[in-house]
Image (cartoon, rainbow, N blue to C red; front, side, top):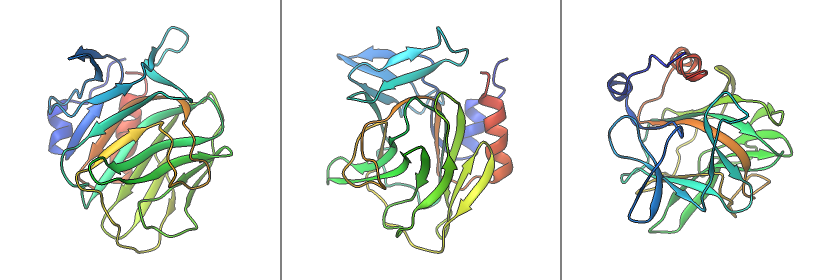
Length: 223
């Protein structure tokens, strides 16, 4: 079953990058996973994370939990309206899933994290207690989405809204980059590297609705 999502359709919805992690290329000695929207916001692969799929019907990328990670550089300020969504399969019960950074200024903070098997979420300067997405089971695929509309952060798991923050104004990175599976000292309880598999990582400069998030989830599940 192939996804019916199109690059042009996603761009019309505000998609800045869609990295499936189903393929990769090398240029100038650097490994990349391509942005399949054609906007060239590719993921840089560090320390040779491996493409999975031999024992898993869903092609993805695997991070070893010790030094492998990916980085996506938007090249602009993090959008004031934001959606991040992707498929995630934890291999262990802890570690940073996604962090937001500004490489040139040292800004860094985990925004999605697994802490003793519980999914935690925030955007930078959202005060504790952080958002909780409930327990995740290892070796199980989940679709995760984090949105911000300028007032509220919302966390979705498998297309279902699980929690919403109180009102707050975030501090956004500029320029913005996201790192996947990399450790961080600004964390929510477990700042280690994440041993996991990831696929279909998307960033939007729009706050997607629950219906759209669910449609993306269903459309990318078996692609």
